[in-house]
Image (cartoon, rainbow, N blue to C red):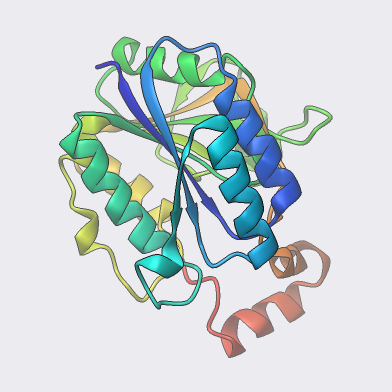
Length: 238
């Protein structure tokens, strides 16, 4: 399996998104890959910049406003569309979010691990701050040794590969449309279906949490306000 589809959902956060794009479009990678950005109702400024970058760097740009009127976040639609495309082309699916910066060899190492690991469903790179410390959402991995660790804990979609076998085993059309985010459910579903999930603690990627939705940082600075906004505004349903 050499084909790989890489996707990045984008909701503004232009500065980090441009760093994400640069990391993905200048990799050391042998796999046959294509890269699609799903623009989830970003501002006109961000949309124009993404259009310019798409023309310059050669990735595909899907403006979700052209295919849905559903307000952001549209993670469900993105996952459903990306799954269908990956299955149709017999490809793995790698999600790299717009607040994540990968190194040039990150993607190739993740692709290579698919064939070396036992029955993988999902493979994730551990996230760190820019100074190299493991950060959210993998704080639980601070006690893990360096390597590739099988885990039944949830894998975030920060930088995560979903194998073609797993994609072909569970239809994302069956995901709960009332939710906003799906990494927890999809991680647990992989294990439920008999696959193994792996966290690559030896393969760090820089994560700048919640750059596209700054209000979520209230979870750490003012948790009472965060949970109030989550409840009243019906946001961030996992």
